[in-house]
Length: 342
Image: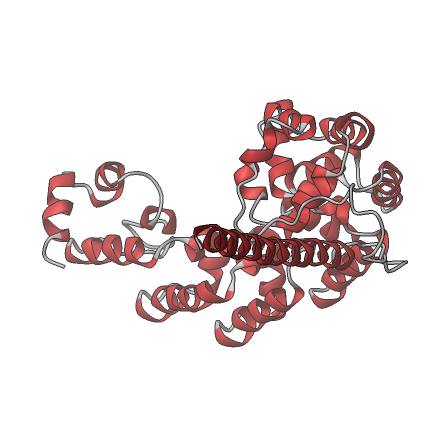
């Protein structure tokens, strides 16, 4: 009786173990399948759909959305070399499809040549940050890089301008010559720019050329239709302060509020704002605090043709102490006491 009971218990344990093994194998199969499909999805070439039934021994393991890449650094010479270049892997790991690509690459064979190419445009101490912002630049071919550099040379960009563009925009070299040509043409036609002005814009703010066209159009509407700048003023504002056109949607309302306060409350004309467009990118509270304080002192006079002229830069530049000394002509303690009354 005891023996039979033990046999039954043993049978039950075997059954449980067998079921657990089946479940584990099914889960493993699901992970492998998910990984294979994910790999196919993110393959940029996407020419042949790989069969999920092939040998999966070389397939990179599936990474969940929030996995920690640090666990792979000790085993990956590629990651170790990226760390030595000061690449911030904690930012890259937020995009598993990029990590998948990097883990499959060999540093010496696949990355080193790209890094030396980048080094011609970026200082050694900044290479890590450059790659962190756009790690996919390590996956692009040198031939494509050279074609895109040749394109800029054909459009009469100087070597210094090209160096500045590549150094300040990590994504520029990811755009094909056709896309860059369309982008440059877009700005030239929309804002009536000549060749020199297009080159000036691309060099002064390279990121605007590859920025979202939707955002550019929206900000153009804000500047022209809601702020009331005419076409020539819009062009001047773009060339002097292109960053205004890179204001994302959450901050467009603040940009318009800042203009309304300057133009409709303080009565600053368009011409003065064009002369010092930085005032449109400062935080609202700073402009308001300093203007209101100058107003209480009877010094809020922003017309350059009149006495006691206060330049717009006084509203946003320098420390409070320097503001009080140079423009308010008082002690900073008086300004601090005023702020407590607001």
